[in-house]
Image (cartoon, rainbow, N blue to C red; front, side, top):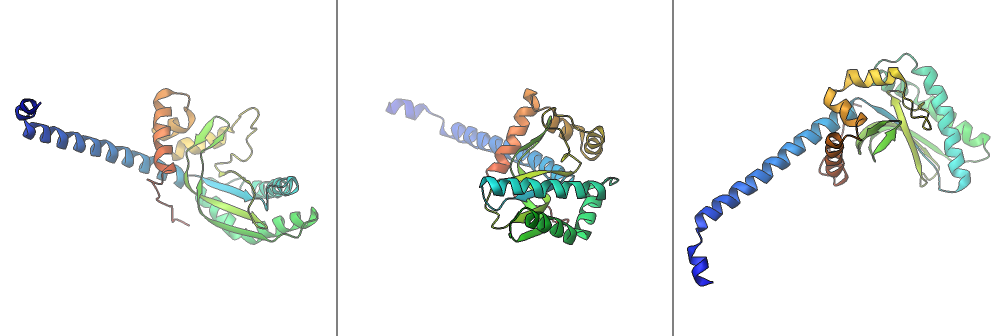
Length: 224
């Protein structure tokens, strides 16, 4: 055993160890750069609606959906001709008091007296699938509606591009929404969210989820 250790070239081993660590660092930096770039660009091109129920009781969850439906109907008339995320955000900001009024009126009409808080900000979201498109977890700009204590299960969709109106049973996404995404995203990014059954893109998608879920990527969009 002593002879074995004497015959080891420690300088060579040290160089190998250094090379190996540098190689791992290179892989981590490359992966981080890729995830940061993709996550940032995806977040910069979508605007979400987030409705949080007062509690998880059956009544409060049903109320959440009533508020959601009324808000989406109103947003659909406002943003019907919007061609960019910024247009939708600007219109949402201009009508934030109307959103609050619609939500409050819905709450009252359903026999509740909960307060309603409405704000636009940048929030953390889990991975979400819309039809055959999947968006990784991360920070996204959103119109957030908090009902009462806002301690119940929440609901979310995309206001831009318009994925709030996707038929989840059929998975049909409007061609216009796809075109908006294809125009805003690179081919790589669009393939990443639309080809999650593909092993190559699925692996990359999981890398993004790993970084975001472990808060290795925490950059927030401050364009609002």
